[in-house]
Length: 463
Ligand code: AMP
Image (cartoon, rainbow, N blue to C red; front, side):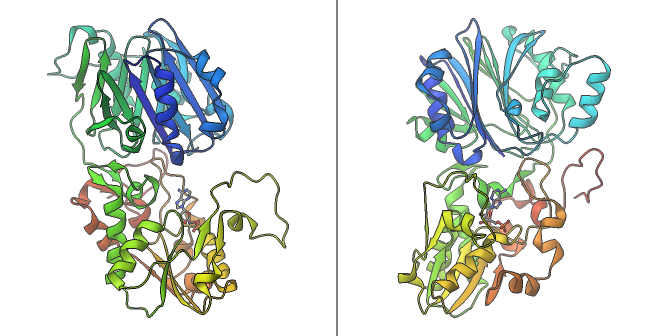
């Protein structure tokens, strides 16, 4: 998972992208990068760590300009090493270009091998590099496409690139004099367009426009390519539309609750998941406790439907960073305890329903259940506001291997026993579908094991 942000036509573009990408920090914490054009040259700064800590005043001074793109990284393809931070910058036959990408390509390996056999060099191990390596390698102008005269050179090269890559991409290209945004034809990952007076903005989620007090204009459509330059903005649809496959996990967990993505308010969708979980449940309890922050919104929906009080039985420490000290056996729960502390004032002697958004490996739930019991909970009923995760994601969410997914190895009752809860319930897949208006437009492979797009070289069950 990653977050992308872009701006075109702003005095001090570097400041806009700094704040915009800061608002998308939840989408990646490994590293941050900015690329800025002053219409003559493109400069890049990339650093490991969180936006506010990594990017210093001097870094912004060094990349001043009028348009820019930014990225926060959470590695899902390629090594986690610093050389894979984005933006990636390259000298191409179309000049100097930088790119940021959210999503995973499913034909990276064969495509890279093909290009290498033609003598194209690669400097990274990330699939995103293909968007630059393919520029200038061929031309394609699909029939019937009318284009603006100033796009004459760019579009055939760009459409060739997009015709060769397969998979999930919400991406931004920064050329010296223009910015290009593209969303893959299946629309796996979100990408939105915003505006602030004469300034165009692009972001993975609408929450990044809020921080700039900008307007959320609209979402790019699956398969849409937008070109912005001094002449204005042009929209193209180079390829025939495909079956949409928007990632339902964005609504379950990934996007911020206040964001608008996939034509939905994330908060409403997530709250509804909690409500539906409650309609399917009749356990007797005294209190509903959310696992902060991801369980909070569904817990609100759950508690309201059940008519139970919602209380903060787990308190999150907001200053948690990365611990470089490996805990000893005796301190093995310390990593979860650094983040969450049980609140005895709420829990003592109570029958607790604890709500989280998802259960993946089961290790977090296990620690939370024992934490709640140690703090005096009489009963602990774990409720998960999404179905069991049974399939790894190949389109850009960081999920463990199939074997590590607990719901692949154990039945419900075994999972309950493993996490130590008195009862365990998940939201059904049917209920999750009912949260969105057109479930057939969503990818739910992590919950259904039905994959809309094959990973080249891997056998998957297709839809
Ligand atoms: P676990 O079952 O221990 O693997 O972890 C489940 C917890 O991790 C839940 O509280 C989720 O909010 C959170 N979670 C789910 N998916 C992801 C992900 N892709 N990356 C990071 N955390 C996640």
